[in-house]
Amino acid sequence: MSGRGLFITFEGIDGSGKSTQARRLAESLRAEGRDVVLTREPGGSPGAEEIRALVLEGDPDRWSPETEILLFTAARRDHLERVIEPALARGALVISDRFADSTRVYQGATRGDLRGVVDQLHALMIGREPDLTLLIDIDPATGLGRALARRGHEERFEEFGAGMQARMRGAFLDLARADPGRFRVIDGGRDVDAVAADVAAAVRAALAETA
Ligand code: ADP
Ligand code: TYD
Image 1: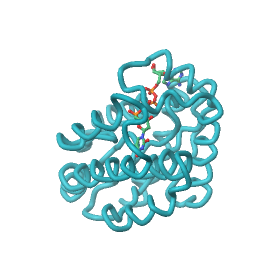
Image 2: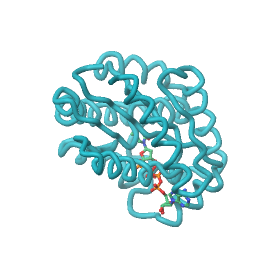
Image 3: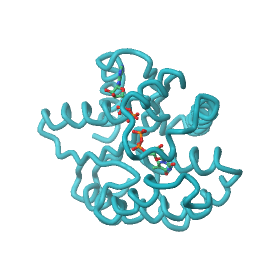
Image 4: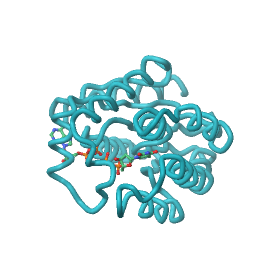
């Protein structure tokens, strides 16, 4: 862990409730007087937000899978340099709505077999993992229903359909099984308060470990 802060990420398929839970967690930790940086990917820094617009808007075939990996990684590098690492160095809690596991799943596992490329680029340009990753696990039909209900102009990745969402859910669960020290899998198919209670318990345990 760099600095004295704690780096927490939320992951899961579209509509799993990550953003809702990330916001709730940030609010409750701030209410305790903690220094909290709530951020998101793709984006999170001015440069990375510009890349977000390039990658999420427009024609779904605009970028090849390889170019897409480069764009997500470029955005992450800027986000890491300008927001995440400075915040951790001053001892803040950083909560990011998605991080590198999303690239492993969306670009590595489901858009061609590019996991090796994703891992190499991560090692070369990012080289760090969160201290704690909360995987909000949800049935794809529920997630898709929630995501479509809130549909906006960032549509490129939300046109996947239920089959693809099921594969992505499986890929996230595989990552969690491979790294049980970092991941906590939380059942997102319940009401917001019940999910938030499990999130809070996982974060309290992580904070106690680092205290
Ligand atoms: P994500 O960031 O994972 O795509 P959001 O937090 O944006 O998910 O949630 C997607 C939609 O579902 C939003 O309209 C949100 O209000 C709603 N939602 C989030 N969590 C729950 C929940 N536990 N039960 C019902 N609806 C939820
Ligand atoms: P996000 O805004 O988190 O969407 P949602 O709230 O619907 O979950 O992320 C936008 C999309 O970008 C989402 O469909 C996942 C995709 N994505 C990737 O494909 N690769 C990545 O590395 C990241 C961070 C996101």
